[in-house]
Length: 315
Length: 248
Image (tube, rainbow over all chains, first blue to last red; front, side, top):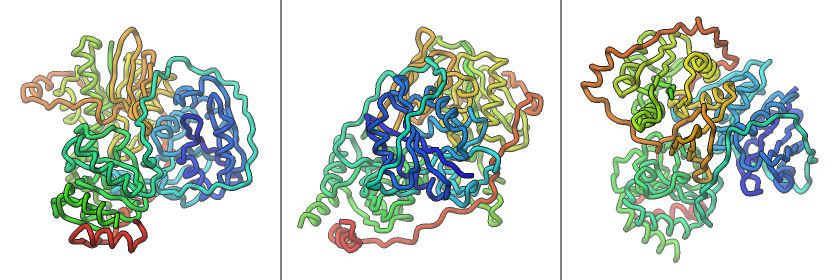
């Protein structure tokens, strides 16, 4: 019997959209039930959000003061205990899920399927390796618990419904470690759409040239209501903070529109945007690899083109 | 304090990966192999901690076939004190790798284990977290800054929301992110010196590690190709094309 436990990701009392994407992958596995588990110091509001995701049978809450900061060492033993009776445990393949799920898998004594792109059967999945340059089909032994992270860019967010699934408080008798402590979280403050959920994303690369010049990227993104990303080269050069990095080791995204501005297109970057609906590249080097995968390319000076685009859109 | 560093050999990051036509794997014959970039960062961080006087010994660990020696010599030339070569010709899953490290930890008693956050071949991103779980010790994944003082390590982590800082008691497992440091280049005299550094060879089979994997890879395929796009000549044409697609 297929029963899936989905680990909810949340921050500041709000459910992260990646959770609904992991639920989509769970739905594709056609299980008997999909339960979402919310571990937090105050899970009620988050659980209420999770209960509205279509396909969710039940939401389990684990309220403990130690769960305030989502530390993997603290959460994993609780999830491993709660996983009894489930055939599958899914988490979004975000930094939260990547940190936590392997720790859960090891406690359950199983390997993990990382970055599930598609579900081929209850125990058969496709996932990318070599920065997405090969796609492998993997089969998990039918007798093992499947622990998997879900590549969020491959899955739409499951819709929300008006009806709510039931919410059940869970008490787990688990002794939690105190060897790991949260100190602080420096969040980039931005009113722009979240990079991983945005319908449009504008990214800047090394060609932008400096932190000051990056303003032109922000300005254009705001004009079209887009989230802002960056290539590794731009982040390494200090033009923008790490949370904006798109690519193999940064964020993997799938917006409807992706505009790569001054990005040459190393394979590690391309792997982060392959699932975008339409890719636009603007680069002064007509031979840049980004043009090989762009749907629409424009060769030229970004500092001249972006103001022209703004003017043309404004008309 | 002793630091154990995972040092995996992978297909070089500049190689364009080709999937074999029969879907049985990717082409690795005659392909350039290098250290996993995240493992070079792990080794560099361990060396810096030693140079600051916070550690006495840096031991690199490689799991793989007999010809892994040359790769381990590179790590020794970079500055590791010695190497442990766990020999096997089989593919090793992240869980089996974690179990292997645990065995070595029991013998070596390190205060810190530093691994790359992922290897750029299987992109699994699991071994460090699994090791920390099996060892029942703290994990600090995706590290971009590491500070050690008073039996504790304070690690800044690159997370989706920004930069998270956590504090962990030693011993602990750290996995490295890209911006933790820039690994040093190997100098010729160091290559000569590395030749006399010890490499302990241990047969994986002798460690009593459960290596059977319950996940089987049944098929390899090339990713779907995006169709060839169009070039536009100016901003006006680009805006018109995007409006036509309903994207503006």
